[in-house]
Image 1 (spheres, one colour):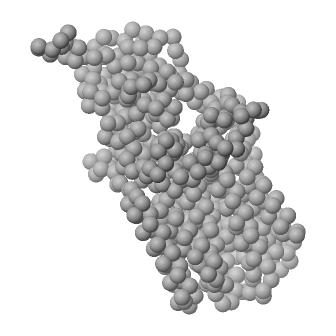
Image 2 (image 1 turned 180 degrees about the vertical axis):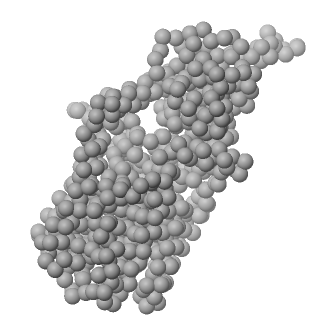
Length: 542
């Protein structure tokens, strides 16, 4: 009963802390997602919701008119839509939250990741409760594994409220898959064998990047350190389950992954440098904030554990330690790997804290190790005046972007050009397709958008608009649009580019743009027909 209370408290903590950004996501009775990619995902979910049974291969709401074959897959689309169907039935039409009754798809998208994160912590807690050391006793600090998953800022961000991103589903599937690996090596059973195989297969369905790398590494480490445990019938059943899910996924949607065109390779590298999760870590101190202070003593503690553990348990610990080391190295290369580093490391913390002879010593060490994590949370909440002003401006920009999107709504298709980081949200709210997007598959649209905002020649700008069939232009923060365009194209900023001119009250007629006045933050301009387009062809009715 005591351990069950701990599990319940950890699960509630995991769920509650994932809503720490509630006031940033829910503003004025509307939901605002925290990443540009989230709006692309929600546009896909919107398509599925309107036509159940649809598997979205081709996304024309970005990189207009060519569209993209996205690497996004169906499982998260249908998980969001499935939740939306439930919420549509259960959501109250009266009371405090009645204003969201017409936004159940947005609510489902905002809730899907924190629910996956809390459920993962709950499952890992029950798994950790069954762990046994070499002497047959449960690790005194078994609770450290789910607790670290519950509070680590990196894993919380991956599963936070308002972030419907496939990363949360990958973390969920891989967390269960790695827990199943332990049970398969230490105490083989049909349930964990099948569950592990299905979770690995589902992870591969969601993405062929992180899950594939971790699966290959897991197999190689398992063969190297736990070869005896890999030579059994259970592993054959596991492999069949993995293969079956992958075959089913291929039958449903093939392999929806497209590498960027080689002609855009340099531009892709420059664009990727502007995205936080694709950057390198730059320093090792962040590991203490995300994984706790135990990361610094983990090598020595694991060495001691290797000499204490006997049988298959020691083999699994070597496999898990190898995966933790690999993901830490990959996180140093690209920050996008940090949730998987937390996941891999959390599963071995009960063994690290079993090194002290007394249980209270391990518990004290575990709690003290979380001090850097607590400090990171405190710094994120205790904002300076400048940071508070920045958050206020970001919130204001999101609200004004939604108002601008409302002004773009129309029964006819009006493709628009806007900075790439704003395009997915404007497309989702307005229902109009964008030239740019947030995915690497649409890098050509991102480049055309950058060229447009840096244009100094009306002929050059008009050529881009005609090529893309643009009907609307969205002017926003000109300084940011110019700087990002310069970074993406790898050129110097020209004098007085179009991004600045778009805010002139009377834009020169040569640009062929006209529209709103007396607006701030966002300005919508219509593309006027050129003289060649406005003159009727010979013999045509006027």
